[in-house]
Length: 60
Image (cartoon, rainbow, N blue to C red):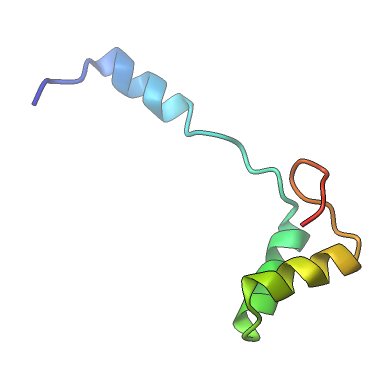
């Protein structure tokens, strides 16, 4: 395998990807529903009913 230059390695560390866009409260609510045994469709319906926006502001 080719060696990665130190500059390329540093750039990779500085840009870890897309930043999180959901609030911690929303993430906690999703984890809570999932831990309770809810499926993804039920979680989406619940979040929509509660008026929780998606990361892009749309519907679940």
